[in-house]
Each structure stands twice: as structure tokens, then as C-alpha cells.
Image (cartoon, rainbow, N blue to C red):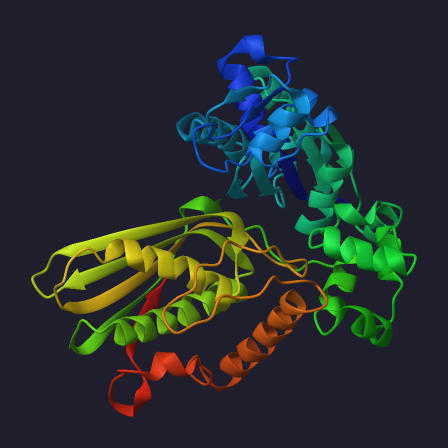
Length: 419
């Protein structure tokens, strides 16, 4: 039986570039990019829609874009402006939605369930919100009404850069079937090439695979991606600003320490605790902060910001290692460590992994380049198996040997965590 869907996704396509055009109207209709122009090996954070037509895309190296187009206007990022506009959009959405998930960067999920008597049909409310944001803020947003978050997100991707689409309950599979496979969250270049090589170019082709077929082609996690292609998604709209959430864990050493091996082992334990919580919540992190508490009560802090979302323990450990190095500025013994994951974002279905800038830690060899058929795929499958054991037997059931160095009685450090 088909019914009225209630989940909305608002997608501010090219959000940073659009906000810059709001701040400086002369940029409208122009080719420009948003990037930290003075940073070494800077990468483009966002592009105007005109720049997109010229072949420029977020993530491209700035010097490559400049070589391609010659004179290219580069706008430095203004995070405060993006946050302000994001909050303004949130305020409009909050008038109508009892459940509102602010995913940051111009992305919002709303669940209108139960508001029909107040505001009328859900599709009318979706159109009203979109029109109000365009009128009062000046942003034209892609908007989709669907039975769940995944289908709504594919809906806005199919509309880019703007428009309104509605998918009724029961029509999820039919809507997704002929959409390009690249619109499905979790499908990146590597998986796209793999599936294309066996003749699958639309979401419906993936949806038709049986369990044995998808496992043989994509491995254990492939079933989850196949179910997504069928329009199945049980994730609720999470009330609040996702970007304000934090995942934290702390470690009190049994005795004051200074040795690098003990600090390294402690950091691994924190990463494993936070990483498991992160993945169970189907999130990823772009910001890691390590705090060290010295015996004289002075605190040292270091941060690592990633261009790409991180979720696997190996990726998180590489970033946390950089943050720890930045935090260690004194030759004084340390009493405790704290790890904080921030800049969280939805991270489910991350089968198509990217290579972060890996920084080797003491005693660890640099990771080789990861390919779908080799490191990336094995890392994903190994992480899934480790997480399964930890969920079943406890968070410390499996750990790196280095994490056991200098632990307390029984081999387990005094970890505590919070979100």
C-alpha cells in the first residue's frame, strides 16, 4: 500500500560557493573556486556552478585548476559565514519539523510525521520550506520528500542543482531503479568502475543481485549496499546539529608516563574505543583532537583536520598520531590522555574508501597505497570482522599489541568514553 512519505532532504548544492555569491553579488554567474590559496598543495573546497561546467570539481588541486583555466578567481573560505547561513536555514526548517537533523554544509534532514494537521500535506510543507529559504536567504536548494533518508538523499542528488521531487512510500525501488549508480551513497569511482565492468550502471542493476551474487562481487558488506539500492534504510532522523556532536574517550595511566611506547599504546586504545562508537552510529569524522594532562596540571592540545571523512581505526590512528605530536610540547611526565572526534558526518555505506594522508607512528611502517582490490578492501573487511568481535565479546576483545604496553592490571587501561 502506497502512503505519504514524511522525510525531507534539503541539499544546498555548491553550498560554500553559493554563500560566497550571497556575500559578494558580483560573483554570481562567474567562474570561481573556494580554496585556501596560500596553503601548500591547496585543494579546492568548492566550486561555482559555472566552474563546475568548466570541469572543476571539489577536491581537485588548486594548481591543476589554475593551469587548466589560466586566470581563475580564488575565494578564501569563510567558515563563519557558512555556519551563519547554515543556522539561518535551520531556523526556517525548525518551524515545521519536530525532528530536524542539521548535517552541516547546507544539508538537512527533516521528519514531518505528525504535522499534517498543523501545516497540511507533507509535499506542500516541503515546497513551502524550500520557497521560504529561497525568498529570505537567497539559496535555491534541491529538495526531496521520501519515505527515508537514503531515498531522499538520492532524490536531491538527481535534481542538482535545484528543484523538488517526491517519492511515495512503496515507490522507492521504482524511483531508484533507473537512477545512475553514482548517485547512490557509498558508490565512488572504484566501486563504480567495478560494477560497470559487469554491466551494472544503474541503481536497479545492483538491486537485482541475489545474496550470493552480491557477496561474491562486493564481499560481506555488499549486501548492505544492495539493500540500499532497493531503497531500504532504517536510520531515523536524528534531532540536533550533527556537527555539534562529539565522541570522546579518556585514559588515566596507572602511573605518570613519559615513554613514547606507553603514549602510543594508550592512544591506540582511545582510537579503538572511539572508532567503534563512531562506526556503530554510522558516522565519520574529519576532526581529531588529543589532549594530554601533565603531572603539573598543564594541558597540551593538538588537532588534526582531515580533507576526507575518516572512520576506520587505521585512518583515525594516523590522524590522532599527528594530533598527539602537536600536543607534546614539553618534557614533563603525563598523567592522562583524551581523544575527541569532531566534525562528524553521516558515514554509512563507506565501501568506496579514499586514501588519507597517512603519517606513520613510531613502530608502524608507512601504509602502502590502498586499492579496492588490495588494501582498501581488505582494511574494510578486516575492520568489519574486528568490530563484530568487539560487539560480541567486548571492546577490548581484539586490539593491537602495542595497545597492551603499559596497561593497568589485567591488561586493560582505564578507558572512559562519552558522546
